[in-house]
Length: 288
Image: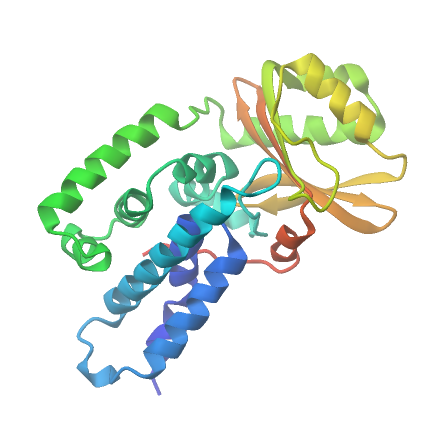
């Protein structure tokens, strides 16, 4: 018996939805709805199940994205994407790892919903324009224009990392070791002068409501809020090394970083407990 197309492409559908929504929980909700709708479709009438399922997931994600955009306007403090636990081998697919990084998901968050969908489908998954046009219910010429506009917006806003994966991993490990051992000078040295710290507590736990700019201010914040019983465990999130913060044996948050020119230029700390469930179970991301 052949594998059901939904099960065969489930990882792909999750990745498409996650990159559009920035939330693992919402992506799973989309997949649940796709599965329910797929169960009602006469499968023998579907010429290309993968394209059909991607189209369905895209439309449902677009609907949810428009609702989330309104909800995020009322979010308490800084909103950050929900991190997902990934295997180290995801980093071998450089394009995929970059597309699900926290920094890139924040860039995608600045795009209008349709523009974001077109960019994800075309630039990340290389879906043909004709299929994208069906998914977003636009003409193919219109989709080509949207894609060009999206590429321009992303190019203007995306970070330009200038380090190899090995150099990036070494910097993140230096940050972890300096923080865990209390090496204050080592911590200062690994932060860029213009580093930006963003913390997401969702109004449920303590976090800075606004981004913190500059090495001195970021340093003072980190040293002021670090509890005595803090442990920092290495973990892979969104395709790159990250840090799992454990306080008195309890998961307290996770940190991901953007490394450029040998130092940390962006530091993202997620403490909202609603966003930590996806770091307990590895997610299998997939490309077309």
